[in-house]
Length: 364
Image 1 (spheres, rainbow, N blue to C red):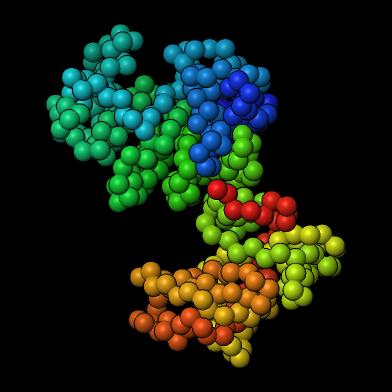
Image 2 (image 1 turned 30 degrees about the horizontal axis):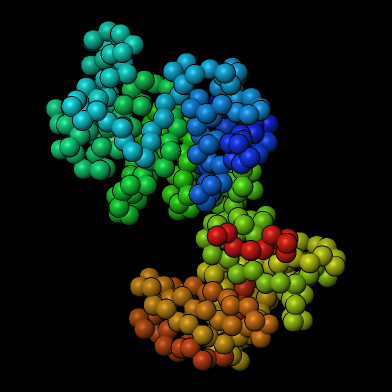
């Protein structure tokens, strides 16, 4: 598919601060694309440049193949939904949604039709005459979404749109946003610092750090095969073990233990990583399950009951603190691995990834 949004070599500086650094990115038509990263990584600045609210210091931005770098926001075929809904308090839901169409002097019959369709799509039918103060936060966000969609833009830009909502409502609206995007079929670009939100909704995610893209791909690609320690730590929890590649798919930890990894090489200082839920935690002396040829020994230092799972922290002889997550299937059986117990940690080589050691610090 062709690129709906193309960013080519874009840099944005504010005085002596570089917010976005030589960024290039193509977003396909009809994609739900997420820009994910911590505060200050450049994701919102990137979105604002797509929308025309900021001008690049250098580089070009295209929409549907047309260069729009120098066009103001009102001449770009995109709409933006902000975290602060920006509804008109004196207008009812219907008039809020119709506002943009009325300013463009669209025929009244078409306004009624399109507003009705937008309200139905966002499940607001029957609330046409309510004012924003009479709506919940989730309903107000739906009005803001309907107001943006009623204009039928080429792309919809979402700037942390669910950030002001409570956790339960946020999760509900994540699924609603995905449903709406599939129904309307237009490109959504979503900025968020919430990993779960990006992974739930986006077809593709670009993880940003210090104005650059660290890695892009599907949620599964980024989670299972991170290429940098920043990505490994930002998307969920990762256990990173210092060591070096010593041959064909073999990794030696800093204290001499050997692990199998899905990467060849020799002599390189790297970190091997494994996700907490991939590790089988067993009492010392147990036989590792078939296929789990990567084994480390350790001592349980923390066992935390989380309801659906038990989270353990295990300290290895080399000093690593390994986090292990196990499903709560036995109703209290986690007491058998209480703090102080000697254990083995076992996992499959295919569940191991390798990242460069010099980037192996967790993001602040």
